[in-house]
Length: 71
Image (cartoon, rainbow, N blue to C red):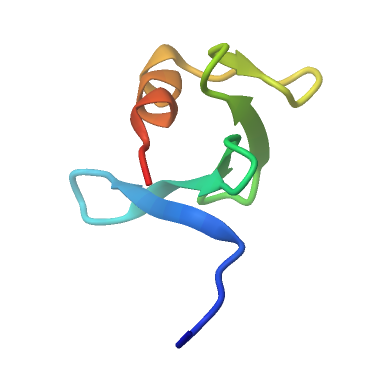
């Protein structure tokens, strides 16, 4: 085995000026970690389409992208 990863897939959202605004990472347990460019992190359960981070709100567009991630 060449390398080990603690996630299944990761993708970035890029704005119209080419800057990464968010990074979505599908974890081994099926949750998705969303990290903003400012360093904020939330955890999403894409199967139930809910945010697992207390007090955080995830825009519908990010929830749709998190739910669409596949290994």
